[in-house]
Length: 247
Image (tube, rainbow, N blue to C red; front, side):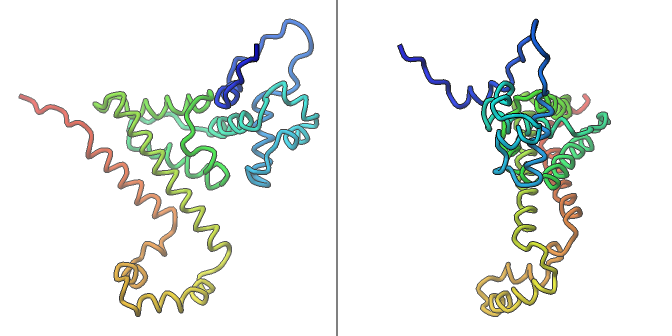
């Protein structure tokens, strides 16, 4: 009787199975963190698509087949890398002010993705299953606890915040990629004539106002991020349950 084929999801999740306890034989030559670090170095240098079991094994000075003792697919390797990146963060102790603690998490997320752009595709929408991601999830949920929210509302709020920061940073990276190292003067020379023709047409009044009047496109990205973050925090605060009025 043919064996049932293992699902891709189970194959990916197997990386988090407890490592077997060895009563005999040599100790494992590599830890999960060492394997993940090698993959992260390659992704930083060449991009996430360049990461492979063979390259990671070469970086560790071993053969690809020996690496399969620890992780048996690229998908599992990426799971390790995604979790390891969160574990590298040196999070401060919670202050007890949910607004500032939430800001700290969001800022840390942005800093990590800007430093490692491949994380924008690896972290976005990924469920928390690895130990570091689970600890990060617990930390984020604990910040929202005690504000009168149900467990569903806490979960949805953290999900909304993650979706927002993922989108904000991916947009930052896309803009950087689009313009590259081109300076402001070259942007004006290259795009100015077309933009001026759009304004003269009169067909796009809001776009024209942004070009002529708006200061935001020229503001430092860190300032724009903080302004948007303030609105996100204010939006959350505005929807929190109000404490009952004293009799």
